[in-house]
Each structure stands twice: as structure tokens, then as C-alpha cells.
Image 1: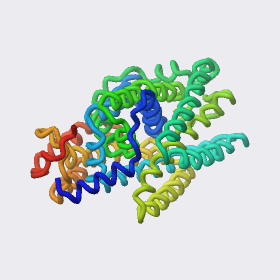
Image 2 (image 1 turned 30 degrees about the vertical axis):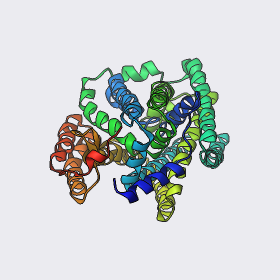
Image 3 (image 1 turned 90 degrees about the horizontal axis):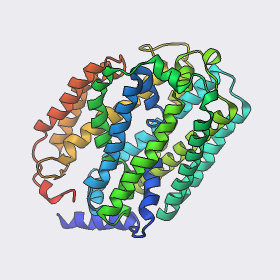
Length: 422
């Protein structure tokens, strides 16, 4: 490895903070990981999957998600491996954080504005905006340091677990019920066509997530890393997406149906759910802001511009709620456009530019591999469009095949053997 890169890696290790060797630290990072991954994909995509593909769709979302995210704790066997990855692929990692926070801004503004336009939102509900804002600001201060970041994540997780208990004990008063939602779309074998794209996305996207890499760099041994990632996704995150399944019926009815005619959610459950969403989004935004703030320079400005533009787009699409695009609410179309980054763009980048299969190592991005990535995305996107937007799921298979086969043209990386994952 070149001397200047060695120096840069040393600097990055110092900037990431001290590693945690205490016995309970991995559990704190487990909460951090589970909370930082509970965002507008985990809190909304399972609902769309259940609506379109029934319980099978939920399982196709949940299983690759939990396994793919947890696997990072095994694949990156040392903190130095994570530092190398985030150093050599820094632009892609920063882009991941910026687009993730823009996705949050879009989804939250669209859904809140949509709800306000479709039904009478009580005055107290608007205070959830204050909750989200205050918690985001507080979390940005707390996530700056490892111990306080874990404390903030534990607090966020505890609140969401209380909300989960409230919903588990109060679902009898919710309409439509979970059973009604699942009965409306029986277990569908069509979900199998979604499995390759779900697996590709959830197995590869975590490596560009700077919050994941921060947790991996803080765990000083492979054992602690496996505990953090295994518990973080096998327990903490898994419980959060169980909560998503519980409120799937009312949210589908709100976006797709007649909220006044077929949706009932008691005030306590609605308020609890609002707090859950506000705190989860606030923590994830704060965690990603912390990572992009460390980059400095133009990154901070582009981050803010992208987020505010996404807010404007969300509100604009909510104003078109009387229209249907591809038999969906316009806001859902926007949601799926953002989703394509995690189903196609980021996985293609990681697959073609980061992974050296033969050497079980990391490769460096080259002009050739980047060009192949852009070409693969361009060729695959029409297939993804038909699969995601027109909901003709079998068309996703050739799209995934294009991405997988594109690696054959990426060219060799002469220095790959120096960048082993372990």
C-alpha cells in the first residue's frame, strides 16, 4: 500500500474515534445499527410489498434485509478494512448519505402533506414536526461521540419498543386489521421475482452506509462486530419492521383508498406511531449528517440543497393527490424513483467497483469500472422501470442479470490483493 494512503488510513482511524473494548459496547452499537437502518425503506416499503404481493412480499423484503445487513459484521473482519473501504470509495459513501437524507425529506413531507390534504389532521399532530425537529437537533449533538451516540440510539429504540407494545395491545381497534390487509392480497408466488433485486440491494448497499462503517470501526474484534451486527439486525431492526407490518393496513388505505370510509386508528395509536416515525427519522438523519459534516467542503452545502429540494418535491406531489400515475399516487412514484438508487444504482456500484470475488478482497474504482457501472445502470434501468413502476415483477430478472454480468467487463485491479477484507 502506498505510504500516502497508509497515512490517510491512520488519519481516518484517528478521526473515527477510539474503538470500544468494553463488554457492553457491542450491544450499544447494535442499537445504533438497528435504529440507523430503520428509515423510510424499513417503515414504508414492507407496506407496499404486502399490498402488492401479500405476506410473501413482506418476507422477500425482510429476510434479505436482515441477513444482508448483518453479514457486514462478518465480511469486514477488521476496523481497518472498513476504513480502507470508506477511504477508497469516499464519493460513493457520501452520495449514499446525501441521497438517504433526501429520501427522508421527500417521504416525510409527501406523506404528511398528503395526509393533511386527504383528511382532517388534528392540531396536536402538527406538534410531531416539533418532535422530529428537536430530536434531530439533539441527536446531531449526541451522535458526535461514540458513547452518547449509543445512548441516543438506545433511547430511540426504547421509545419504538414501547410503541410496538402499544400497537400489539391496541390493534383490535384498528381498521383495516392486519388480517384484513393480508386477506386482501393472498400469499403470492409472484414475490419470487422480487427476490433477486431484494437480495442484491440489501446484500450490497450496507457497505456504502457510513453509519454501518462507523459501528464496524468502533468494534475492535471480529467477535464484537458480529455481536453488534447480529443483534442489531437480527433483533433490534427485526422488531422495528414487525411494527411496520402492524400499521400496514391503515397506511395503505390512506394512500390508496378512502381514509374516511375504511380507516380507523385510535388517537393513542396514531400519536404513538407519529412519535416512532419522528424519532427514527430524526436519529437516522442526524447520524448521516454527522458523517457528511466530517467531509466538510461542498458536501455540507449539497446535502442541504438536496434535502430542501426533496421537501419541495414531496409537497408538490402531495398536491397532485387527485391524479394517478401508473395506477399509483404521484408521491409513491417519487418514492419508487428514490428506491431505484438502493435497488440498482448503489448495488451496481458496489458489485462492480468494490468487490473482488476471486481475491476475497476490495478492488479500487477505475475509470473503466466506473464506465461499465454507468453503462450497466443505463441498460438495466428500463427493466427495473417495468418491474418497479408498472409492477411487472418478472422484468426485474433481466435487469439484475445485466448488473451481475457487467462485472465481466470491469477489468482487473492490479492492487486488489493489497486490500483484503480481513
